[in-house]
Structures are given as structure tokens and as C-alpha cells.
Length: 362
Image (cartoon, rainbow, N blue to C red; front, side, top):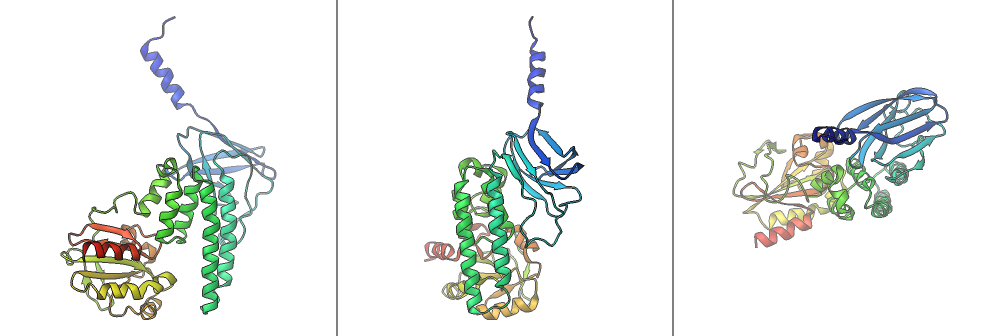
């Protein structure tokens, strides 16, 4: 029997649209209820029913994708984070507890037991365990700003990053590694150099993924904030009430420096930034954009950094600032060098910016 071309095409389309189980969950102590499974990339939510303590999710997933999982009535404010793909992920929960909104400093009580874990989600839960320990230690060390406490916080931070760098490196070919970096970015725990280092650990496959590309944008290695692209316009008012825009500064090179009074590396670099400004007074303008949300802390930070004579601006919106968002600022310190034509010359560290200025403005 001959099959027409149209029939063959319909069969192929039908096969392409077919879904298969990509997630199975078993609860030992929940018989019924609803689960909300949120595809973060597509911003779509599927509602699944728990029947006799079991749930099966069928979907067509072309590439590893990041999901939020919420058991209605238990963890609505603290979603469980998962990477799912076309391969079946199976897990079970022996006891699923209610998670409050203010339990960020507690060990997450609903970590699953994985029966099959093709995307190595277990590595992310190991990562979260280190994060909880780090968070608790930092909170305990934040009672005062003594030199001893500051040094302990610094060492704890570097230990935390070193431990998790190894986890990311061990999973460089897994999408979950990008999820870990994204988590660090969202919690403002990566400086620019560290982000670039972490991004370079990712395999080409992960770099091409949804989260991988987003991380590449933030690291200055992809996207619209690349060298040669027009810099986003700014409309800033400094502490003296003077207005600045890239249009008004055309003909001069501009360093846009994002920092805050609570950022120890920012304060430490301030003398070198001031020195760079003073050595290039005719053709370089430095604008210090603070992400502080408290006016008094911002002004005290300016004094502490010794940058009172420089241009200092702050809209007290923190990371929600329109300017910070337009420059995709998710960590500090970070510097943008904008050339005399209003185009981005470089996004980088102070040392990278300084070298670039030496090359272009001898």
C-alpha cells in the first residue's frame, strides 16, 4: 500500500509533536494536591495533579531547561529549582515540609532523593548546601565592621567561591553549571573577573544555552553591550545637582563605574581610580554610580573611599535603577569605558580599563 506525501508529512508532524515522560515524582506523605511546574525560559506554567502520591510530567523538551517546582500549600514562596530535559528525571520525597518565606538562612528541607538524574541536579543541591552555610556564617560575621570581622568575611567569601568553582568545573558540560552561576549573579556574589573565569569554564554547548547566553552577556562576551555598540544613554544628576548625559559628554572618554558603600573591593580600588582620573583630566570623565539605597550610607561611602572631588551620582534605587538595568549590572564593582563617540569601548575591571586607556590615550 502506497502512502501519499501528505500522509507521510502528517505522520512526521505527529511524531514530532509527541511528548514523553520527563519527570516522575513520588511523595511518601502527600496523597493528593497540585503541583505548579514553571518553565522559567518560556514563562509558562503547567498544573499537575498528585494522585496516590505520584506525579508524572510529559513534555517535549528539545534542550535542558530550567524549571521552578511548587507543591501548592507547601513551598509557594520558595520554589524548588530543577533542570529537566528529554531524558527522564525521577525523584522522591520522604517528607515534604511547609517552607516559610523567611527561611532563606535555613537548610532547605525539601531536597529530593534522585532515582534518575540525567541533568545532575544533585550537584545544584550540593551547591545550595554550601550557600546556606556561607549565608549563615556571613550573617554571624556582620555584627560589626571591625577589621577582624571584615577579614573573616573576605576569607569566607573566597572559600565559598573556591568550593563552588570546583563544582561548576566538574559539571561544565551540564546545564546545571550555568544555573549555579546564574544563582551567584542573582545574589550579587560575583565580581567581574570571577564571572569571566566561571563563564570560560562552561562547555560550548552550555554557553549556547538560554542561561549560558545570558551569562555571556553579563560577562561582556555576548550581547548588545559589546565593544563598538552604542552605549545606553544616561540622564544623571550628581551630588552637587549637576546634570550629565552621554550626549553632553560627547568628545570625551567616559568611565561609568558602578559601586556601593558596602562593597569592600570598590572602596579598596578607589585610590587607583582617582589616580587614573587625575592623570587624564583633559580627555577622561569618571562617573561613580552608586547602587546604595540609603542616602547617608552613600555619602559616608564617598568620604570613606576618598572620592569627594569626583562625580558621584546615586538614584537610591540599587540594582533596580534604570541606569543599572540598562547596563545589565548584577555585580559590583564593574566599569564601562565609553569612547568619545558614545560607543562602548570596554566592559571590565579597573585594571583592564586602565590598560585600555594607556593603549588608546598614551
